[in-house]
Amino acid sequence: MKGSRILVLTGPGKGKTTSAFGMALRALGHGGKVAVIQFIKHDGSYGEVVALRQFPNAEVVCSGAGFTGRARDEESRERHASAARDGWRVAREKLADESVGTVILDEIFYPLNYGFISVAEVVDALKKITPGKVVVLTGRDAPEEMIAVADTVSRIECVRHAFQQGIKAQRNVEF
Ligand code: ATP
Ligand code: MG
Image (cartoon, rainbow, N blue to C red):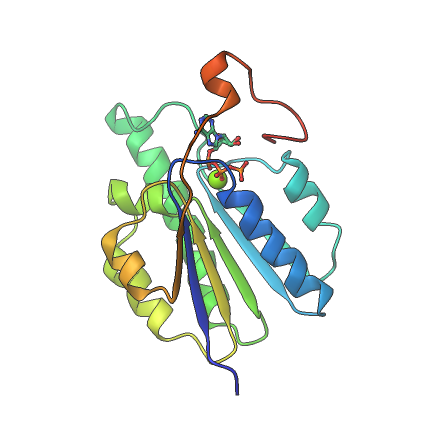
């Protein structure tokens, strides 16, 4: 039986989420079942989400309260925390479900760094995955514990980004 794999895609450069979706596509191409849980993002209007949902073997759950209102006040903090906990509940289920070969936890490092989800709990769930399972975790600032538990870690550098030149987020490129 193949061993399980845990991959972390982190760093300030562009390409983490799209790389993870690329891996989802690979697994689907081989007939595998894929679950994507997106933290932070609250709707499925991203091109990659719309595309992946067209595969019967893919499930995409968006469980975030959006990019804005960054946990500034108590009420918005609780809204973000609650969305993150809902996402983690689904993620935990998918991590334990042997029929799902690939699990993508997109932008999970934000709720982990905010303390909305317990790092120890995620590490524990990752350590229990069955052989053959693939888990990809993305987000800018991967906690040390996540880096330690992964077999593959890529940190994407930002050499330059159009945003710095005043170019706004664009369809087909950023969403
Ligand atoms: P992508 O979704 O394109 O693979 P990403 O997952 O690496 O990018 P995130 O850190 O999740 O990027 O950032 C979310 C949004 O910000 C995406 O629309 C992404 O394209 C854009 N972005 C990524 N890197 C930068 C950057 N260095 N400066 C400004 N915007 C960025
Ligand atoms: Mg991303």
